[in-house]
Amino acid sequence: MVRNGLSAIALASVLFAGGGLAAAAQAPAAVPDAPAPHPAPPLATADGVNGPIVPGSGAGETPATGASSSTSTNPDQPAAPAQTAPDNFQTAPPEQPAAGEGTKQLGTIIRTYTNFVQVPVTVKDTKGKLVPGLTWRDFKVFENGQRQPIRWFTADAAPISMAFVIDQSLTSDVMARVNDSLAGVQNALTPYDEIAVFSYGHITHEWTGFTGAQSSRVPYIFSEAKTTGTEEETPVNSGPLAGCPVSKNGECVDPNIQEGRSVGGGPFITIPKEIHTLNDAILEAAKELATRPKERRRVIYVVSDGKENGSKATYKEVLRYLETNNITVYATLVGDSARWGEGYLSKFHLPFTMYDNRLTAYVITTGGTLYSERGVNGIEDSYAKLAEEARTQYTLGYYSHEPILDGKFRKIEVRVERPGLDITARDGYYPSAQNSQ
Image (cartoon, rainbow, N blue to C red; front, side, top):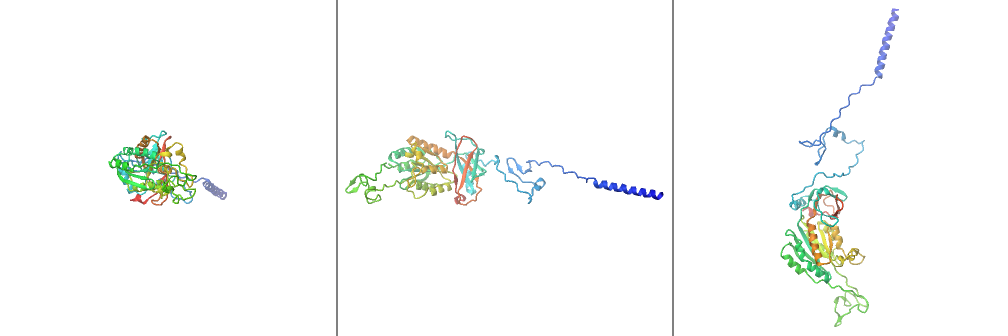
């Protein structure tokens, strides 16, 4: 019995130990405490930047430890999608010089930074009046479709370097009105401005280089530049009056229609083409303007009916030169192009014919303004309005994201975040090595 009792006790001990081991095997493992969440660091302190984003100052330094260490590159994790520019694209304000100091500092910036782009902008309301009081926050600038941060902004009036171009191929009645209005050009300019005078017909003539706008030399130059214009006649190339309607001593009174010369011979004559070298005149004025300081408003002002025929320079060549040297074309249309209805039709060009109004394309593309006037008072008023417009533009500046010199055209678009406003600015520009000088 003793032996049996010891055996029972031993068996009970084994069963008890086995049950404890089984219970221990079925019990869940102990879970350690999860790390406590750390509070987010402040955005900014008095000593410096503690967070990645600081309101009003852009991005700061990202901490090397903490939550940022978990954002290291992981090949198994897909890249985050690109972020689009929000409405608060630019929080840091651009450089805004004190009143009256804008043009002085602008010249230093243009000479220092080769990729700096200057964009004069005219803003008008629905009644055609200039809109003052806008700030840099009202503007958005895009180059080749990509928004650019505005790094420079001023509303200071800028001095003007004006190349004044007179069309002398106008008819005598229109030419007389233009001659009477020339005295108003000097009244539209200030002592800080300068002017050069050109004229064109068959050829381009420079009457004077740049001189002070209020100099006594200017009225004398305008008096010398006056001409009688041309006579408007109806050409006849067939019938009894064709060839030489009036002759003297066997020679035609008008040598231009003498048989055997440029008009040919026989019963039909070739009507001489009209010559209006508008392209050549704008190019000559632009070459003179390209030598003026970059901080001045470079303006070509043309008084013409807009006709173009016979120039050596093409429209594309001249336009590229204007866009490369930041030159704006303003104009007052006179003659047939200023007549209601006919002035609109003259904008359309028929193949193998003369351009009846090439001037409109120059003005729109370079960011200028075009007025159509027929009377002397209207022409004089247009001088004052356009000069004021060119002087009181907003000036925006940004640094291009494109290569400094690639020779490609860069399109510019300026928007204003206010309804009912008309924005006028140049369509774009070509980078030039002159910007680095």
